[in-house]
Length: 249
Ligand code: APR
Image 1: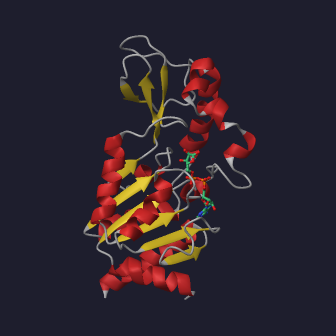
Image 2 (image 1 turned 60 degrees about the horizontal axis):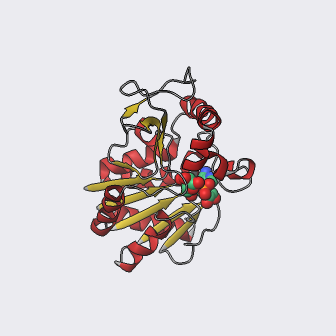
Image 3 (image 1 turned 30 degrees about the vertical axis):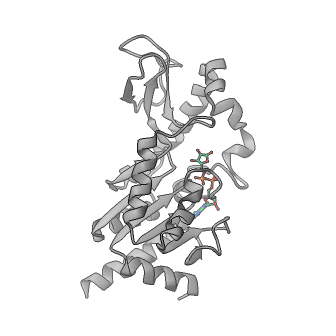
Protein backbone atom coordinates (compact mmCIF):
# COMPACT_ATOMS: atom_id res chain seq x y z
CA UNK A 1 0.00 0.00 0.00
CA UNK A 2 1.19 3.51 -0.84
CA UNK A 3 2.20 5.39 2.35
CA UNK A 4 -0.63 7.98 2.22
CA UNK A 5 -3.30 5.33 1.74
CA UNK A 6 -1.86 3.10 4.47
CA UNK A 7 -1.99 5.97 6.97
CA UNK A 8 -5.46 6.99 5.78
CA UNK A 9 -6.65 3.40 6.17
CA UNK A 10 -5.23 3.18 9.67
CA UNK A 11 -6.95 6.43 10.70
CA UNK A 12 -10.30 5.55 9.10
CA UNK A 13 -10.30 2.07 10.65
CA UNK A 14 -9.51 3.30 14.14
CA UNK A 15 -12.02 6.14 14.12
CA UNK A 16 -15.45 5.85 15.73
CA UNK A 17 -16.82 9.36 15.21
CA UNK A 18 -16.08 10.57 11.75
CA UNK A 19 -16.84 13.82 9.93
CA UNK A 20 -16.52 13.82 6.14
CA UNK A 21 -16.26 17.15 4.31
CA UNK A 22 -16.84 17.01 0.55
CA UNK A 23 -16.51 19.39 -2.36
CA UNK A 24 -17.22 19.28 -6.08
CA UNK A 25 -14.47 16.67 -6.69
CA UNK A 26 -16.58 13.86 -5.18
CA UNK A 27 -19.21 14.39 -7.89
CA UNK A 28 -16.72 14.82 -10.77
CA UNK A 29 -16.85 11.08 -11.51
CA UNK A 30 -20.65 11.40 -11.76
CA UNK A 31 -20.16 13.82 -14.66
CA UNK A 32 -20.83 17.03 -12.73
CA UNK A 33 -18.29 19.76 -13.52
CA UNK A 34 -16.21 21.17 -10.66
CA UNK A 35 -15.88 24.95 -10.17
CA UNK A 36 -12.13 25.39 -10.47
CA UNK A 37 -9.40 23.60 -12.41
CA UNK A 38 -9.07 23.04 -16.13
CA UNK A 39 -12.67 22.09 -16.89
CA UNK A 40 -14.07 24.14 -14.00
CA UNK A 41 -17.31 26.13 -14.35
CA UNK A 42 -15.62 29.37 -13.24
CA UNK A 43 -13.29 29.12 -16.25
CA UNK A 44 -16.19 29.61 -18.63
CA UNK A 45 -18.68 31.56 -16.51
CA UNK A 46 -18.26 34.66 -14.40
CA UNK A 47 -19.56 33.89 -10.90
CA UNK A 48 -20.32 37.60 -10.39
CA UNK A 49 -22.82 37.46 -13.25
CA UNK A 50 -24.47 34.21 -12.17
CA UNK A 51 -23.99 33.50 -8.50
CA UNK A 52 -24.53 36.74 -6.58
CA UNK A 53 -27.71 38.41 -5.28
CA UNK A 54 -26.91 41.45 -7.46
CA UNK A 55 -26.77 39.31 -10.62
CA UNK A 56 -30.09 37.72 -9.72
CA UNK A 57 -31.90 41.00 -9.13
CA UNK A 58 -30.44 42.43 -12.36
CA UNK A 59 -31.47 39.47 -14.51
CA UNK A 60 -33.31 36.66 -12.71
CA UNK A 61 -34.18 34.90 -15.98
CA UNK A 62 -30.53 34.66 -17.07
CA UNK A 63 -29.43 33.34 -13.69
CA UNK A 64 -32.30 30.84 -13.68
CA UNK A 65 -31.43 29.64 -17.20
CA UNK A 66 -27.94 28.81 -15.98
CA UNK A 67 -29.25 27.03 -12.87
CA UNK A 68 -31.87 25.21 -14.97
CA UNK A 69 -29.11 23.86 -17.25
CA UNK A 70 -27.09 22.71 -14.23
CA UNK A 71 -30.18 21.04 -12.77
CA UNK A 72 -30.60 19.16 -16.06
CA UNK A 73 -27.04 17.75 -15.73
CA UNK A 74 -27.57 16.92 -12.06
CA UNK A 75 -30.95 15.28 -12.61
CA UNK A 76 -29.35 12.69 -14.92
CA UNK A 77 -26.29 12.16 -12.74
CA UNK A 78 -25.98 9.09 -10.54
CA UNK A 79 -23.96 8.75 -7.33
CA UNK A 80 -20.55 7.15 -7.93
CA UNK A 81 -18.57 4.63 -5.79
CA UNK A 82 -17.16 7.53 -3.73
CA UNK A 83 -20.65 8.62 -2.62
CA UNK A 84 -21.59 5.00 -1.83
CA UNK A 85 -18.40 4.42 0.17
CA UNK A 86 -19.31 7.42 2.35
CA UNK A 87 -22.77 5.92 2.92
CA UNK A 88 -21.09 2.67 3.99
CA UNK A 89 -18.92 4.62 6.45
CA UNK A 90 -22.02 6.21 7.97
CA UNK A 91 -23.41 2.73 8.63
CA UNK A 92 -20.17 1.48 10.20
CA UNK A 93 -19.36 4.30 12.57
CA UNK A 94 -20.86 5.12 15.96
CA UNK A 95 -21.23 8.75 14.98
CA UNK A 96 -21.12 10.26 11.52
CA UNK A 97 -21.69 13.68 9.96
CA UNK A 98 -21.26 14.66 6.35
CA UNK A 99 -20.64 18.31 5.55
CA UNK A 100 -20.96 18.96 1.83
CA UNK A 101 -20.43 22.10 -0.18
CA UNK A 102 -22.23 20.45 -3.08
CA UNK A 103 -25.73 21.45 -4.09
CA UNK A 104 -26.35 18.41 -6.33
CA UNK A 105 -28.11 16.16 -3.78
CA UNK A 106 -26.02 13.10 -4.77
CA UNK A 107 -25.08 12.21 -1.19
CA UNK A 108 -28.77 11.85 -0.34
CA UNK A 109 -29.28 9.87 -3.55
CA UNK A 110 -26.53 7.49 -2.38
CA UNK A 111 -28.36 7.00 0.92
CA UNK A 112 -26.24 9.10 3.30
CA UNK A 113 -28.56 10.47 5.98
CA UNK A 114 -26.78 12.88 8.34
CA UNK A 115 -25.88 15.51 5.76
CA UNK A 116 -25.29 19.24 6.23
CA UNK A 117 -25.63 20.98 2.85
CA UNK A 118 -23.65 24.02 3.87
CA UNK A 119 -24.23 25.85 0.55
CA UNK A 120 -27.87 24.78 0.26
CA UNK A 121 -29.46 22.68 -2.47
CA UNK A 122 -30.29 23.15 -6.12
CA UNK A 123 -33.45 21.14 -5.50
CA UNK A 124 -34.89 23.77 -3.19
CA UNK A 125 -36.25 27.14 -4.25
CA UNK A 126 -36.97 30.10 -2.02
CA UNK A 127 -39.29 33.09 -2.38
CA UNK A 128 -37.45 36.41 -2.47
CA UNK A 129 -40.54 38.08 -0.89
CA UNK A 130 -42.04 35.81 1.80
CA UNK A 131 -39.00 33.44 2.08
CA UNK A 132 -41.14 30.32 1.65
CA UNK A 133 -38.88 27.37 0.81
CA UNK A 134 -40.07 24.44 -1.28
CA UNK A 135 -38.62 21.33 -2.90
CA UNK A 136 -38.65 21.51 -6.69
CA UNK A 137 -37.47 18.73 -9.01
CA UNK A 138 -38.90 20.06 -12.29
CA UNK A 139 -36.41 19.95 -15.15
CA UNK A 140 -36.77 22.18 -17.04
CA UNK A 141 -38.74 24.60 -14.90
CA UNK A 142 -41.62 25.58 -17.24
CA UNK A 143 -41.58 29.33 -16.55
CA UNK A 144 -38.47 31.25 -15.55
CA UNK A 145 -38.19 32.73 -13.03
CA UNK A 146 -40.67 30.55 -11.09
CA UNK A 147 -43.21 32.39 -8.92
CA UNK A 148 -44.19 31.71 -5.32
CA UNK A 149 -47.58 29.98 -5.06
CA UNK A 150 -48.17 31.67 -1.69
CA UNK A 151 -47.46 35.34 -2.50
CA UNK A 152 -46.58 35.53 -6.21
CA UNK A 153 -43.01 36.68 -5.47
CA UNK A 154 -40.01 35.66 -7.59
CA UNK A 155 -38.42 32.40 -6.45
CA UNK A 156 -34.63 31.92 -6.38
CA UNK A 157 -32.43 28.83 -6.00
CA UNK A 158 -31.99 28.15 -2.27
CA UNK A 159 -28.22 28.15 -2.49
CA UNK A 160 -25.66 30.41 -0.84
CA UNK A 161 -24.23 32.87 -3.35
CA UNK A 162 -21.00 34.87 -3.28
CA UNK A 163 -21.50 37.82 -0.95
CA UNK A 164 -24.09 35.99 1.15
CA UNK A 165 -23.73 34.72 4.67
CA UNK A 166 -24.20 31.05 5.45
CA UNK A 167 -26.90 30.62 8.12
CA UNK A 168 -25.10 30.55 11.49
CA UNK A 169 -27.02 27.46 12.60
CA UNK A 170 -25.46 25.47 9.72
CA UNK A 171 -21.94 26.59 10.62
CA UNK A 172 -22.57 25.79 14.28
CA UNK A 173 -23.66 22.26 13.37
CA UNK A 174 -20.45 21.76 11.35
CA UNK A 175 -18.19 23.09 14.10
CA UNK A 176 -19.99 21.04 16.74
CA UNK A 177 -19.56 17.86 14.66
CA UNK A 178 -15.84 18.60 14.17
CA UNK A 179 -15.43 19.25 17.89
CA UNK A 180 -17.00 15.85 18.68
CA UNK A 181 -15.26 13.79 15.99
CA UNK A 182 -12.12 11.68 16.15
CA UNK A 183 -11.35 12.02 12.41
CA UNK A 184 -12.02 14.59 9.72
CA UNK A 185 -11.90 13.23 6.17
CA UNK A 186 -11.74 15.96 3.50
CA UNK A 187 -12.61 14.86 -0.03
CA UNK A 188 -12.47 16.65 -3.38
CA UNK A 189 -12.38 20.29 -2.38
CA UNK A 190 -9.87 22.91 -3.50
CA UNK A 191 -9.97 24.35 0.04
CA UNK A 192 -10.17 27.97 -1.05
CA UNK A 193 -13.72 28.91 -0.05
CA UNK A 194 -14.51 29.79 3.57
CA UNK A 195 -15.68 28.70 6.05
CA UNK A 196 -14.98 25.13 4.90
CA UNK A 197 -11.42 26.00 3.84
CA UNK A 198 -10.50 26.46 7.50
CA UNK A 199 -12.24 23.38 8.86
CA UNK A 200 -9.17 21.19 8.44
CA UNK A 201 -7.11 23.60 10.53
CA UNK A 202 -9.87 23.96 13.10
CA UNK A 203 -9.83 20.17 13.50
CA UNK A 204 -6.03 20.12 13.74
CA UNK A 205 -6.12 22.85 16.40
CA UNK A 206 -8.35 20.55 18.48
CA UNK A 207 -5.82 17.76 17.88
CA UNK A 208 -8.09 15.74 15.60
CA UNK A 209 -6.46 13.78 12.81
CA UNK A 210 -7.26 14.97 9.30
CA UNK A 211 -7.10 12.92 6.10
CA UNK A 212 -7.44 14.44 2.64
CA UNK A 213 -8.28 12.80 -0.70
CA UNK A 214 -7.78 14.85 -3.85
CA UNK A 215 -6.34 14.46 -7.33
CA UNK A 216 -4.07 17.44 -6.74
CA UNK A 217 -2.37 19.28 -3.91
CA UNK A 218 -4.40 21.83 -1.93
CA UNK A 219 -3.49 24.51 0.63
CA UNK A 220 -3.96 21.84 3.34
CA UNK A 221 -1.67 19.20 1.84
CA UNK A 222 1.34 18.82 4.10
CA UNK A 223 -0.54 20.14 7.13
CA UNK A 224 -2.77 17.09 7.43
CA UNK A 225 -1.98 13.64 8.82
CA UNK A 226 -2.40 11.94 5.45
CA UNK A 227 -3.00 13.24 1.94
CA UNK A 228 -3.97 10.63 -0.59
CA UNK A 229 -3.59 11.66 -4.22
CA UNK A 230 -6.21 9.99 -6.36
CA UNK A 231 -9.81 9.93 -7.48
CA UNK A 232 -12.27 9.75 -4.62
CA UNK A 233 -14.36 7.18 -6.52
CA UNK A 234 -11.34 4.87 -6.48
CA UNK A 235 -9.71 5.68 -3.12
CA UNK A 236 -12.77 5.83 -0.85
CA UNK A 237 -14.04 2.32 -1.70
CA UNK A 238 -10.54 0.97 -0.95
CA UNK A 239 -10.55 2.53 2.51
CA UNK A 240 -14.08 1.46 3.31
CA UNK A 241 -13.87 -1.98 1.72
CA UNK A 242 -10.89 -2.83 3.88
CA UNK A 243 -12.78 -1.47 6.87
CA UNK A 244 -15.87 -3.58 6.06
CA UNK A 245 -13.86 -6.77 5.73
CA UNK A 246 -11.95 -6.02 8.95
CA UNK A 247 -15.26 -5.77 10.84
CA UNK A 248 -16.37 -9.10 9.40
CA UNK A 249 -13.29 -10.88 10.75
N1 APR B 1 -11.47 12.93 -6.86
C1 APR B 1 -10.97 13.73 -5.89
N2 APR B 1 -10.80 15.06 -6.06
C2 APR B 1 -11.14 15.59 -7.24
C3 APR B 1 -11.65 14.80 -8.30
C4 APR B 1 -11.80 13.40 -8.07
N3 APR B 1 -12.28 12.58 -9.00
N4 APR B 1 -11.89 15.61 -9.37
C5 APR B 1 -11.56 16.86 -8.98
N5 APR B 1 -11.09 16.85 -7.70
C6 APR B 1 -10.68 17.98 -6.87
C7 APR B 1 -9.91 19.06 -7.58
O1 APR B 1 -8.52 18.76 -7.60
C8 APR B 1 -10.22 20.28 -6.72
O2 APR B 1 -9.30 20.40 -5.64
O3 APR B 1 -11.87 18.61 -6.42
C9 APR B 1 -11.60 19.96 -6.14
C10 APR B 1 -12.71 20.79 -6.70
O4 APR B 1 -12.50 22.11 -6.31
P1 APR B 1 -13.56 23.26 -6.64
O5 APR B 1 -13.97 23.18 -8.06
O6 APR B 1 -12.99 24.55 -6.16
O7 APR B 1 -14.84 22.84 -5.77
P2 APR B 1 -15.12 23.15 -4.24
O8 APR B 1 -13.89 23.08 -3.43
O9 APR B 1 -16.26 22.27 -3.86
O10 APR B 1 -15.61 24.65 -4.31
C11 APR B 1 -16.10 25.28 -3.15
O11 APR B 1 -16.78 27.15 -4.46
O12 APR B 1 -17.84 28.43 -6.12
C12 APR B 1 -17.95 27.67 -5.03
O13 APR B 1 -20.01 27.38 -4.06
C13 APR B 1 -19.07 26.71 -4.87
O14 APR B 1 -19.31 24.97 -3.21
C14 APR B 1 -18.43 25.55 -4.15
C15 APR B 1 -17.21 26.21 -3.49
